[in-house]
Length: 453
Image (tube, rainbow, N blue to C red):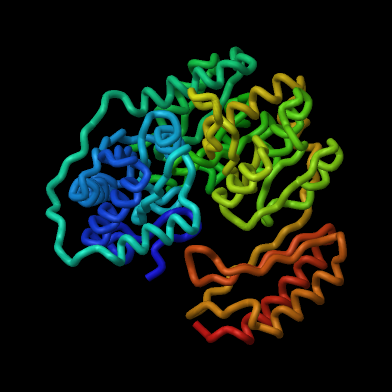
C-alpha cells in the first residue's frame, strides 16, 4: 500500500492506512526517522489534532509507537496545522505531526508530518519513512503510552502569530466575519483578529457541528451571504485544519488563492520585499493570475499540484510568496535564529491580505476586480486503476491537439489524483464554449482507454 498522498496520510478513521496497528507502527517509523536528525539524543515530537472525534484515539496510537522507540512526545492539543509546522520550525522539536484530514469529512482522519524548519516531508523523506516502516520487527506495541501535555500550545501559537502580524497596519475599525469550519482554527483566529483590533463575528466554531459540514472554505455560500447581511468589511473562511483561507470582500465577492497571491504580490513588490520579482503557484492557478502578475512586472513560476512543491520551489528561488488557488498560501515567517520558515498558514495569509488592502488604500472588491477570471472546467473520471499517461498514445495525441488549438489562449492539464484513482482533466481558456468542447473531447478519449467502473 502506498502510504503517503499529496498531503500526508489520509483514510477513513480506523481503516486502511489508519488501522490501530498500522498507526502504532507508523509512530515507531517516524520516531526512527526523527532520531536520525536528533544527533544522538531522544527525538522531541510535537503532536496536534483538529476536533474530529477520532483524534484522541489516533493520538494515543501514534504516541504509543513514538514512545516505544524512545521519543519524547508532547501533545499540543487542539491546534491548527500551522501551529505544528511552527513548532517544528521554532520551538525545538525534531518532528511535528498534525492529526487531521484537512477539508475532508469528519469520518476521515490523517497524519501530516513536519520535519526541521517546519517543512513537510519531501518525496524522498516519505520514502525513508516507508522503508523504516517496512523494516520494523514483527513485535507489537502496547497501546498504553501517554504524551506529555505542555501548557498552552494553542495559546502560544496565537500569541506569537499575533506578535508577528502586529508589524502591519492595525485592523482597528474593520468588521470581519470568520467561518471557522467547526475546525482547528476556531480559537486562534478569533483571538488574533480581536487582538489586532478587528471587530469579529464568528460562525461555526468547533463543536457547533461536524468539522467542514456545510461550512468553511469548501462551502462558501453561507459565509459570503453572512458578510453581506452583517454589512461587514470582509470575511475569512478556513478549512478544517486552518492551513487554507478564502476571503470575501464587503460586497460578498469571493477571493480565492489566486486573488490572495495577486494582492500580496503587489503589496510586497511595492515595498521591495519580493526578490527576483517571482511568485510561485501550481499548474492549477488561473491564467488571470499570470496576466495580473505580468502587468505588475512580476513572473509566475508554476509547480505540480501541492503546497509542498510550491514551498520547495520557493526555497530554490528564495521567493517569499507562493500558493495554490485553493487558498493554501505559503509565506516566509522569520525564525528566532535569523532564517525564515515557509509556512502555509490560513490565519497569517488572511490577515496579511487585509493589511495589504489597507496599505494599498484600496478595497478588497477593487483589488479583486483587477484579476481576470478565465473559464476553467475540471472533470474527474473514476478508474479501477492508474494507466501511465506517458504510455497512453491516444490521450497524449488528444492533449497535444487541444493545446495546439488553444495556443496561448488556453491551457490543458491531465493528471492522476494524488489520493484517489481519479483521472483529472482540466481545461482553461478565454472562450467558455471552446473550453467545454475540449473537455468533452478529452473525456471521450480518456473513457475509451480506461476500464469501466
